[in-house]
Amino acid sequence: MPLPNFAPPSATEAVAIKERQAWHNQQLGHLRAQVNQPEVGFFGPGSMTWRLYREPSILLGGMRALLLQIAHPAIATGVAQYSNFEKDTLGRAHRTFTSMIHIWFGDVDTACQSAKRLFRIHSMIRGTARWAATQDDDKFCNRFFTAADPDLLFWVLATLIDTTLVAYKATVGPLTPAEREQFYNESKIAAQLMGIPLDTYPKDLKDFYSTYHKLSNHLLCVGHVGAEIARALFRLPYPLRIWLRHLTGAWLPEHIALAFGLPHSASSHRVNHISTRFVYYTQFLLPCVLRFAPHWHVAHYRIARQRGQHGRLSGRLFQWLGQHLRWYFVYHKVHLH
View 1 (cartoon, rainbow, N blue to C red):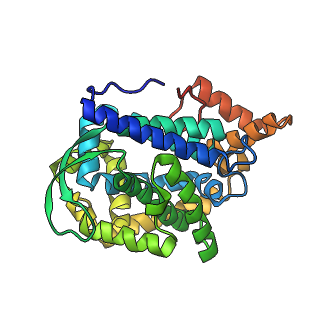
View 2: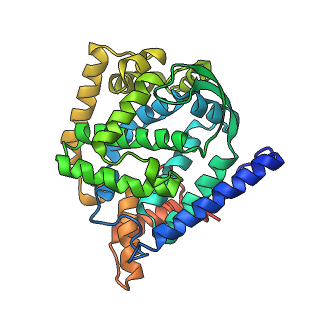
View 3: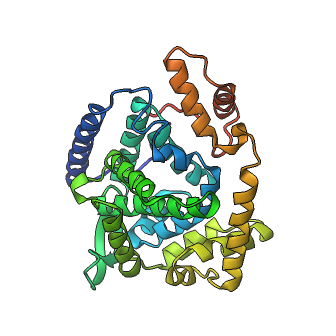
C-alpha cells in the first residue's frame, strides 16, 4: 500500500519530519520489547479492546467520531487538503478503519508497520488553520500544524475512545467502572503507537474526560471547511441520509450537532433510541460467526495457526473474503511497507 503523493517538504520541515520519525521508531521499539507473545499483538483475546471492537454495532457511532474530528479546524483543513473526501468518502473511512484494526487486532509486526505508516503520512500532512492553541486560550488565530502533532493525534484518538464507549453502552450494554478504566488504560498503548507521548496522555478516565470536555466545549469550531466535508459524508440515498442525520445528531453535543446543521431534538433522540434498541435485541439472535466482526475471527485464526493449531473455520473464511473480495470494512491483510 503506497504512501500518498505529498508536496515535498522544505529543508527545515524535512529535518523535523525525520526527527519525529526517529522518535516514533524508538517508541515502537520500546513497546515491542514489552510484548511476550508477538503473535497475539499488543492487546489479545483477554483485553477490553478486543471485547469492544469485536462488536459491529459500534460502527453506528462512526459518523459521530468523524464529525467530532473535523469539528477541529486543523483536522478539517488537513482532510480537505490531503484527501479526496468528496469522491472517495467511504474508501477513506475504510482505510482509516483498517489501519486502526491492524493496530488493535494485528500481531506485533503488523501493528507496528501500520502505526509507522500512519505516522509517516500524518507527518507529511501540514498546513495552517485558525484555532486556539490550548484549552485555556481564548485567542483564535492562524496556526501552523502537522497531523502528527500530539494534540491533534490525541483529539482523533479521544473521539474514538468516547464514541466507542457511547455506542457500546447503547447497543451492547453498560460496562462496569473497572471495565471502562481497563479499556482506557489499554488505549495508552494505542496512543503511543500512534505517536502520542505517554507523559502528555491523561492518567486515567476521569482525567481523560475532564480534558475531553474542555476541548469539546472550547476548541472546536465548525467552519466552512468542516461543513463542506460533512455535506460530502451525508451524500447518501434519501432514507439512509435522513436516518443517519437523526442518529448522529442525537449522539453529538448539541452545539456541535447544530453547527453541522444536524437535528438535535426529541425526534432525533427517538430515532437514535429505536435504532440502538433494535440492534441490541437482534444481535443476540445471531450465531457467533455473524455476531462478532470479521477482524475478531481473523485474529483468533491467526493466533491459532501461528501456534500450530487449526483455527476456526470462520476466521479462515473471513480472511479469504478480505483477501479476495476486498469488501468494505472486512479485515484483510495488506502489505504495509
